[in-house]
Image (cartoon, rainbow, N blue to C red; front, side, top):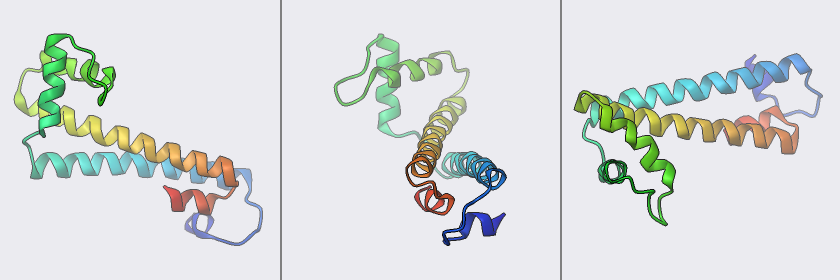
Length: 125
């Protein structure tokens, strides 16, 4: 599988190899999100000021600002129901890194669609 991902020659890749590479990219992004969520939560349990700002928007029913879209306040609204501060900081970090991982996977898929090259898609991811 590693040879499928890292080859840079011009030989066409089979459909099975491409599907395997797509699955590997999805697994990589999932592991990335889990690992960074755990590391961030355990090393820095205090959430940044942006999280407090998002919680304030959620509690006031505001839809964000021109800098931050309405989705931030909607997602932070879950924190109003949270039973503990530990859940709040875990929610912030897990949500943040899963959105980053989804963006990485989107970049991988876009690079593959534009170039039809598994190797280049992995370089982008």
